[in-house]
Each structure stands twice: as structure tokens, then as C-alpha cells.
Image 1: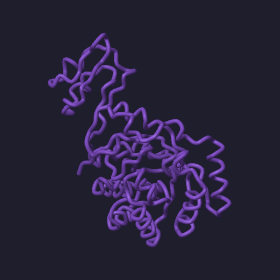
Image 2 (image 1 turned 45 degrees about the vertical axis):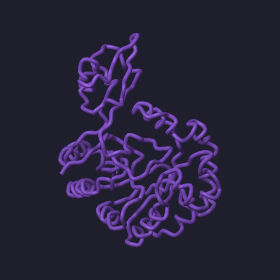
Image 3 (image 1 turned 180 degrees about the horizontal axis):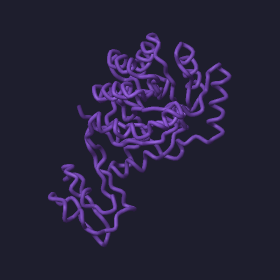
Image 4 (image 1 turned 90 degrees about the vertical axis):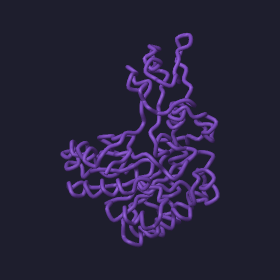
Length: 304
């Protein structure tokens, strides 16, 4: 069995307890306007171009059989409309200004990477986390990875938006020690408008997971001018209070890293859906949100 990933990050300390290795899978049913990893949204390989790394050597021009690259006045120019994603240009680029996003791997490939840091998991109560994208976009591969990790004695986490069939969500939950549950918003209309997915399904699946006794941690992004308001915070408190097996709520302030990634993917900035930096909440606003939830009886978790 193979899966399509776009990164494996070692020594992660914010993707579950302890020191962890996080595996990022491609594919997601949502298209959040504030997505931090837009390269994760599709289940296809993509091409990153980072202008700051380009030295204008022309290697990509010679390598590409479709003529999408040219160097004009010592500046690289690319016509993505003609690109077939053969990645010959990326292979020829000496500085990684052109880079393939997405590689096919086996369960054994991933586990070989995860195994390298066993000693750190044992010392910190860490393990492996599967993220994305959405792990359930590649449910078969995700479940095979979780089974392999448990077979190796590793603690497992999966970060999910919860948007899949109840059967698929529960199947993954039964293989996972802790679900990092992304709750994007608690206003149904705004959730649909900004993510493209129904809040009702997310909450229904969360209830089903909790009913079976699976442990969760709610991760809630805060976007200034979008959902950083009392009504949303009260909504989070209401959702959390109804759960019997949740460790708490982790608040994740929006950051603008995804904007630069959109540019590297060749997507128009107008697709972003927001102005970027104005969405970043000030530190005092984040502290206010934490205090408000604490006053509502929510267990606010610093990191995970």
C-alpha cells in the first residue's frame, strides 16, 4: 500500500504529547480560506516555485520538454498552463527553486523514518502523528500507518477536521490514542462559507467519537475579524462541555504562512479570501480568548 505525503517532520512538540514525528498527507475535503498548508488540499502532486532561490541558470529551460520555462532579462518566467507536472525541471534545478510537492511512499518507508527517533518518544511519552491535509482523505493508508505504529509500540495521534463518514471516522479513532480535532468555527453558515464543509457533520462525528470513549483534544483556530468573537468562544465552550472524553481546548492563532505558499504554488493571491496580516490576532486578543474560555469552565491547553 502506498500513500501521497508532502512532508515528514521530526522533533515536533505541538502535534500531540511529547516529542513526535508528524506525517503530512495530501488531500483534504475542506478549502479553508486561512489554510496554513494549501499544498495539502489536493491529492495530486504540485510544483513549488520559490523566486528567491532562483539563480537564473536556465537549467529548467533545457530540461522542460513543454517549454513552460524561460529566462527573460535574467528573470525566470513560467507558463504553468502548459505544465504536465513531469517535474523534470525540479530534478534539474540546482537550488531547489523548483520543487515537487508530494511523494509516494509505502507504510514501510514512513515507519523507517518514524523508527529513527524511538529513543526520544520513549523519553518524552511521544510518538507518531498523522496530519495533512486530512488523514481520512487517504483513509486506507492512514489506518495502515496507525496499525504499524501501534505494532511498533508507538503512541499515535491523528489530526482531523472530522469531515468524513461516521464509519470512516470511527474506524480511524479505534486505531488512534488521541484525536486532535480541528474545530474551525461554531457558526454553521460561516463554517460553510469559509471552509466549504458542513459544521453539522463535523459535530455529529465528534459526538460519535466521544460516545465510543475515544480521547480528543479540540484545536480551534482564531482568525481576527472572522471568528475571534464572544459568540464563537461561547460556542466552543458549549461543544466542549458536552464531551466526556476531551483533554481540553487548544487555541491556534492564525498566521499568514499559507499566503506565501499559495504564491509558490502559482495560485493568485486573490483566491486567498482575506487580506493576510489583518487576520493575525494580537497576543492580548489571544489571551482574552483563553481567559474567556477558562471563565466558562473550559480546560484550555497550552500546546499539545
